[in-house]
Length: 545
Image 1 (cartoon, rainbow, N blue to C red):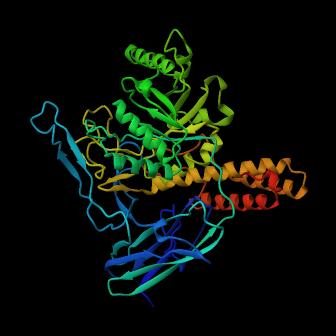
Image 2: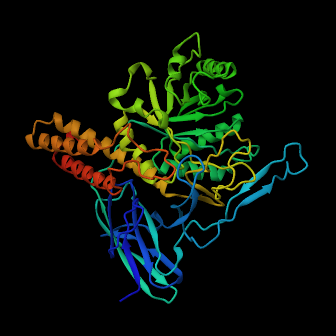
């Protein structure tokens, strides 16, 4: 009997199952990215294991191996899984090509403004890790390691069952194979109506040493964010020429909704936009010290930004902690400027998003919510960007953030060092939803969880469209299918509480104790089945294009 085991491990579950597996099976639509997962285990030490994957083929069509990203899930110690540093915990987070290699980073002196300058600058130097090709790892006797696959289905892929193989070779030359089957469904998903904004802090301005990224890396980051489903983005450029370059890159990548400017460059009226709507970010949680302790300076800055926003004819946005601040924004004798978009801190405003408790008087024209998405809680990320967003009836989300590296000289790969040397941020943990690499990005489980939530939202939007069409159809069978789909959808969504959700616990990773991790995927499978049934029975005239 072989000492090497392949174990079932559902993608967003904390631990593998005890039973062995010989096949990975999944489903998805053209344009979707599908996650697979399993674990490997051995009764003896193995210093090197290499994993590679073939194409997935059906007749003359195939999904190229270059569209299949495979990783070993890195496990490490973090200071809790909440927002602030807490007790040490071991979590699964990083998606790596080789978890045996050290993550060595550091800082290099700025060539033009180094030591001896009045304000010396240091540029962060990320670890030089491999981001492509096969996965290489090792095993200690008796331990298991999770292997992760992300399969990107091209938008033109015909429906059908695609098959392939994952190859595993040990140091002794032993070979193990795992078959892969991917069912490409015969429909595509609609884009949701909700706005999906991610805060991005990278800047192509070399003076912003903590956040500097090259133009090439800037484009790569935005492409990664877009590929995960976000359609709005923030930029932090202070120089007009660099801001225009950032806008052009964002539009070239495909962003089409909002672009939020954290800083407004001089002569901002000269900026031009093709597909994106510019947003002036007026104020960032100006009530952080308390709703009644806002300084006159912050109020004047908020009002001045609002006046300039009207001159520019841009959309306006602010983030708040306490929804009571909205009343002060509506009072002309007080703050007196209410933005078009208000993003509420979800941790402090869950009651606001409980449908039965929402007050229309508190709503701005567009109501978003935000949370710290760096927490190692992939199912929380999935829920808040998907089914929770649907239930909350919010207009959008604005999670923070893609990467916010700690200040010099600290490392984003050390969760126990300081984060902000100014002391203003307290004992916050490193806010990294993805991690920097020399030539790209190290993804994480929570980053993939955000993608899954947005995909869930697209399934919900597609199902809602078809249910609406089915209710208009005169055929009794179509009406029955629509009614059954509503019943199944609402049965699951009734378990997604908008107020009783665990967000910022220092030790608990699941958003709901009453919903098992695998049930989110089972709900998607049910939605896919209902969508397919409605598609096949609806008259062509009622099907979405």
